[in-house]
Structures are given as C-alpha cells and as structure tokens.
Length: 191
Image (cartoon, rainbow, N blue to C red; front, top):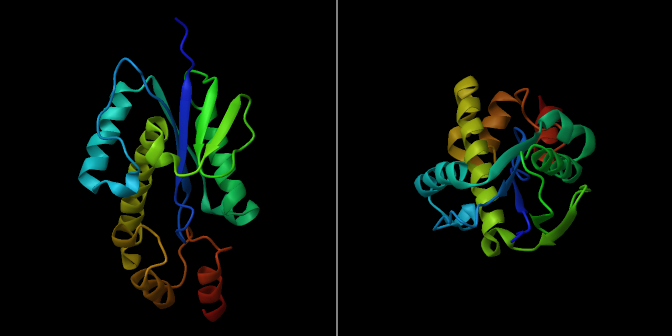
C-alpha cells in the first residue's frame, strides 16, 4: 500500500510590524494520529505548546521556514511569505507528493500544491503546521522582548496594537521592525 505523502503548510506573522514571517511544513503520520488539531488561533497558548511538542514527536517530519524583516522590506510580505513556505517545504526530510497550503495562493514548488482557503481549520496537516509556526514565532517574540523590553513584544507579539503603536512612537523602530510597513514608516518619518 503506497500512501501519498501530504504536507500541510501555513504561515504566522504576516500582519505584525516586527520580526520574521514564520512558516511550517508538516507531514503527519496516518498511523500515529494526534487529537485536538485545529487552527492555532482557536487554541489556548498552553494547548498550542502541548500540541506543538506532540506534533514534533509524532509527525513523519516537519520543518520551519522563515523570511526576515529585511527580506520582507526588500520583496514585500506576500513574496516573503511564499519564499518562507518554499524554505519550509525544502527543509522536510521526506519529499511530499502533495502540498496543501492554507490560503488562496501557492508558492512555486517542485511538486503538486493546492491552496485551501480556511485550511488551518479543515486539514489536519495544515492545522499542525499552523500550530508549529505560531509557537515558534511566539517564542521568537519572547526572545525579542528580552532584547528590547521597552516594546513589550511578549504582550502583543509584534501586531499593531494600541500598546505597540504607543511604544513605537515613544522609542522609534528597533532593527527588527519592518521598515516597509506603513505604521513603521510613519513613525520613522516623525523621528
């Protein structure tokens, strides 16, 4: 019996004003099911962390891909997300025959790929990818928070919240802020 290897891919961090866009690719093991997989945004932080560990243990393989803030500024967030997805798929230790991508577009890949709108709530492999990517990016925001405590990144994860905007105006941009994003540009013009 030859089952098709299917990878799920999702991204986290298109909307924030700081840090990398992080993607994950996961090939789940059909013989080793994981219960509770869902869109990472619908899970508590504690549940996400527990599931991320279980996914890493039980999946056939998984990989993270990323595009840094400087790349996002250079080629735009959409293109940077596609590059990060390509990197995640390329990093898998097993080559999938099919890649399911959350959203409405696919990066160019050397195998069949399908975009699945709302896929992080529909396809378990995409749910798994969304969880791994979210946990990884949140951990990066916690590290960034230690480097630049004045921005309180651990609280808003880099999203353009009222608190983040206030801190950005007060302190200007740090090196990891995305210079091409309008709210950051406006603050840089004022400083």
